[in-house]
Length: 104
Image 1 (tube, helix red, strand yellow):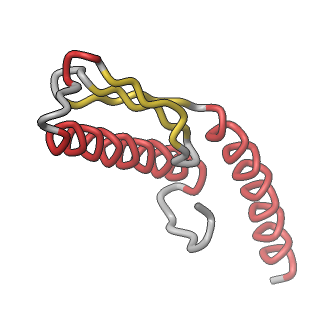
Image 2 (image 1 turned 60 degrees about the vertical axis):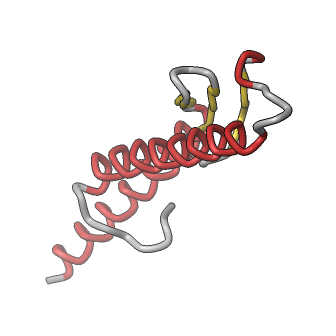
Image 3 (image 1 turned 60 degrees about the horizontal axis):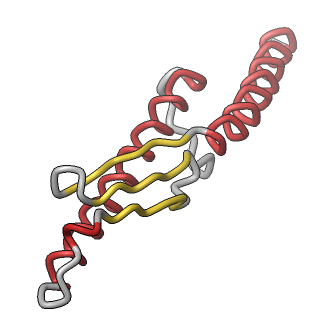
């Protein structure tokens, strides 16, 4: 029984090391999404931090700010969702699909 416990502890320590490395890697991963046919481009990293917003000047109409706001909102939400999916996929590879609360 002690041998099984030692194996479990060793596996947990190995997973902890892998997760720490993954967290560092995810901080450097970037992804870009867009909305409005590419009129708005958003770049985020694996920590769901917004890195850049690029707005094509053609979609800036002072008389229709609501459209621009909607395009930006859509692009930001999509970028966050894709970043979360990327993180979850990377986590599943390390944890074997086991959900460990509080990791990310």
